[in-house]
Amino acid sequence: MIKNNDIKLIFSVMLMLISSVSNAQDKVTIFAAASLTNAITDIAAQYEKEQAVQIQTSFASSSTLAKQIEKGAPADIFISADTKWMSYLQDKTLLKVDSRVNLLGNQLVLIAPKNKAFKVDMDKNFNIAGAFSGKLCTGELDSVPAGIYAKQSLKSLNWWDSVKLRIVGTQDVRAALIFVERGECDAGIVYATDAKVSNKVEVISTFPDASHDLIVYPLALVKNASPTAAGFYDYLKSEKAKVIFIKYGFTTNLP
Image (tube, rainbow, N blue to C red; front, side, top):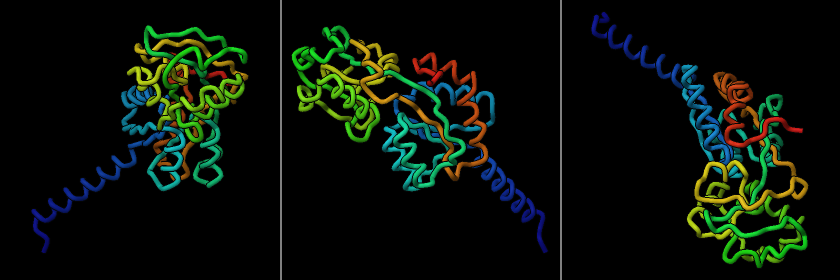
């Protein structure tokens, strides 16, 4: 015969299990490019106030995040800083393809530590190597989107050969920003949005859009995303989210 205490114990365990399942369903994990750190953090906090959902964030280079998702990391939503790494996952059938949209745009800028700016002309005849001393920081040139865009621009402006041996490639664009903030690099190539959140660097100039591929941030649901993720996915495309993205310098009207 089951005693009352046993019934209470069973009932308590059932409640704990139900609560655990509920909590698991009410958590959404988003993997987003490092340059989105501030904007996504703010949007997630705002969404959590409106909905009983916990938003878990992970920020790194798009390449790192894509490889983590490929290896089975429990992401529900992915935002890349370029189309390459989103397509990488799409080709491996790891996305809900119908959910893929181009969400944001950005610009590429040349920066220096605060009060250490130098003159630059975005011209093929300009001697960029003689304009500053020391290293040039940007994302890893062959994998991190910011670094890929930077290499394209440097080649387009015929600056590549003169500075390629002075380039420091970092794990993501925010790491490049930090190196410039600390003065460990005398120049850096980052996104306009990265420079905007720092009071320790100066924007010297903006690279011509024609000097690199269009900077596009695609958004998509990961193939095995939880049903709860759809709500936050929609929120990221909403006017409320757009206000925050624009506040941090992203463009939302893509061509």
